[in-house]
Length: 402
Image (cartoon, rainbow, N blue to C red; front, side):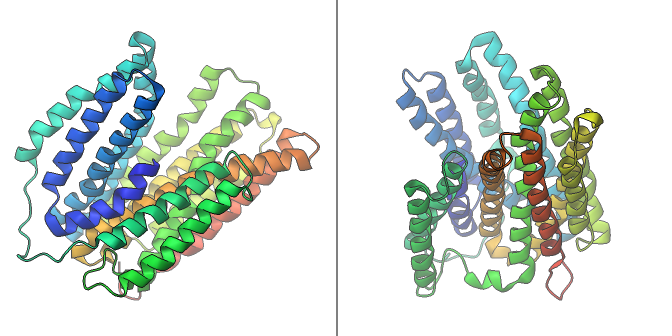
């Protein structure tokens, strides 16, 4: 995740300048090759290297998939495209662990990587026929290598700090040092971008309230979504004493709700606009958080089921119209960059959800004398506040219609 998120914006800018089809095809080949290397890894060290290769290929694909669709479809179909793309992500997130688990049980962990190869080959063969490169103006500007390096290191340091914050204190040397490195890189990045003729990120993009608030709302929306997946298994086990199969059957409500809402909200945003749908989705998600903040053993599975389903429906209703609004506020020659920044926002929200959930639950359990349920409630009240803050952010838009 760190590798992909750190490179998304860089590869997005490179594709804005040089074209998407070849980079997307290269991503397929690299990802497939990394998967084979994972399956054949003789040691843990080789497996780590192979996973890094996978992340590189995944970043090339992720940086170009949605951006390519946005380029070839008219603006009136933008919500449909984003909704369909996000529904695919939700489907993969839901089916992947189930299918991977079945393959691992049948043929070992190597099989879960090996099964990717035939899919990668099929995709690589299809790319020349399925993807047509839009005509680009001759004489593309130079790629901002210095800015790309500073941005990549800064994002990687920031996301690494969030990752470590889920398992160690925020004041630990590793977390503080990573955050400090990230700040230094951001300061230098802003300075460099103001000096080069063709910056990697045109900082004027952040003058758009839709673009900036939309990305902040994305972080606030994905934080509860991630926290659900981290915190609810503890509740279902510690409070309701459910077996692993029962826990899994309840957790599936989250991706199912997300998938269903995403399919509807995308096309609907093309018809009625994005201004109401995006904040409305986060309101639904926030209500789900409140339900979990008052959940009790007497409610049985009803409270977690309702909270997860509303969480999935809410984030699903929010994503497509919010992303569509962000992309509408982005210059067409910067779509790849915008897509990358949205990916960083999504990853930051996911990592913050785990960090806040883990650190918050541990701290509140201690503060509540070792009692789990009051600590769980405290954490979810905080998450509900974050969700409602996301609602406010999602209402901030530029004066012109999205």
